[in-house]
Amino acid sequence: MLISQVSQLSGTPAATIKYYVRAGLLHAGTRHGENRTSYDESHVERLRLIRAMLEVGRLSVTSTAAVLAALDDTSKPIAETFEVAQNALARDAVADVSEPSPESIARADAVVERAGWLHCGDNVGRRILAQTIDGFAKAGHPPTDEYLDRYAAAAGLVADADLDAVGAIADDSERTELMVVGTVLGDALSVGLRRIAQAARTADRNL
Image (cartoon, rainbow, N blue to C red; front, side):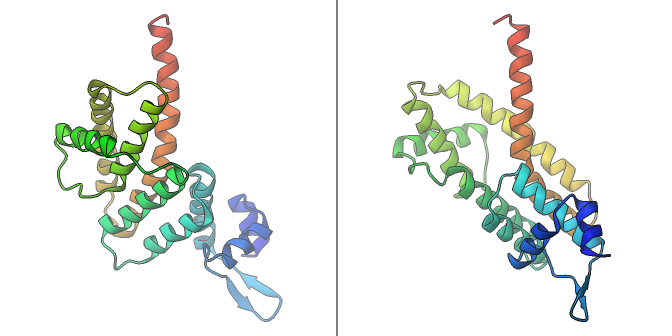
């Protein structure tokens, strides 16, 4: 198909498609002579994935490229690809936030321990959690252990939902792709649902 058809099917302007090719996000089409390049359905599918990461997941172009490179490297185990997606999100989410204090790191580790989560190592979420605890404290509202533990319990349910969805897919490449896409877009999904739930619960409690 021509680039105009790809543009129409994916909802992406032709100039943007060419930019994605130059940036290494999208594989180039097949050239036929000097003035004609053809594309196929794989370009449409990749463009939808790229736009989801950039527009919904709000990743930078650099982070999106890193995630896509990990997806394309079939030699990597799923856990490693998953980690690349987590790190990409973390870079974009906390780039301008100061390093967490030792006190917040200790509290973050305590939350993980109380939740009974093993094999976490130095997951990037530990730093994000600690920075968030610091943020609450700087705003004059340090979170209680009960508050943090309830969030941890909710996070456990979300993690189970993610992994159940991934485990239901038989194809290795599709399973890996869903894990990465779910990591990138799952944060946006959580934010949207949390906003709705807050509004509903506020009305229920007549606050």
